[in-house]
Image (cartoon, rainbow, N blue to C red; front, side):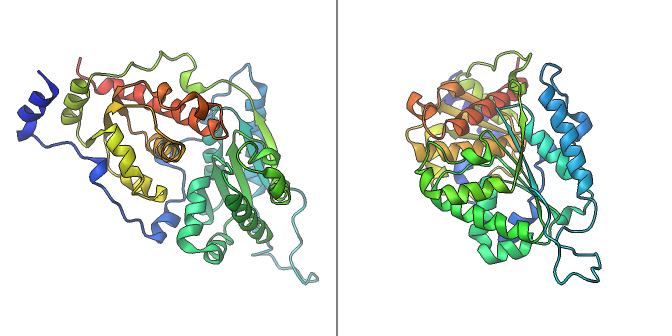
Length: 361
């Protein structure tokens, strides 16, 4: 049966959802309330992280982060909740007020970051967790001063996937984190780039050296070595399916969406990346037909954000067309955003593997 014939035969059933028909509105208060570890990391803890026995840095990172969490159990570093009889102002914290997890793709950095959030002895409302993009989107929604006010009473701010893609973000984040550290907020971040190397290859970093060095001063780096656990000892990701199989699966899977890949890329340009999480609300699976190479850098970066949100929410992705490792051109994979693109490939591959069980045998 052809895809068209199957679609017509299934017309009496509930049609799949379409991401291209969704234009979510996300109020600013939701952006703040959702600054918690994503569903995929709800239940992770330090003792559920499985260090590679061949990579001692992974075990060392667990010990260092556990101690860091314990050290956050006292009063707010600004002095809140502690009487100081002789000091006119709170004592400044000594040394970096943050840890920076540096490592390759899939070594468990986000698992460890979320475990730190869970282990820190403070109410959830006093801890914030979000990606770098979500943090900059929060500033865009609330404004700089309101963001500082909102986060300055927190015990801990966790920033996942810390990357600086343009000079404006460099100055913005440097200023924001400086204000938060002054307020006593502890920081934790993950990235594939050491804090002193942020921005290299993407813009004239030398022109913003002061801001980059200022960011680096807030963090104590922790190196985590290892191979991508998403592919460690697992079978290769399934090859793309036919349009017919993808369409049939979309109709047979509750809560699945079905979209033509090129049309979805066009739609993403009309939705702010801060809304991509809401774009995926209540989805059981994402089914895509006619996957093609991404045509340009702006489109590719939007797809990276969508891949992150799908991965955070553990939404399987079933696709026809090209395999996901052919999404980005060699020029993109060798350029300044290569780390983002490799992360997207890794995550989409994992989600494609998760979708294999949806296909009727």
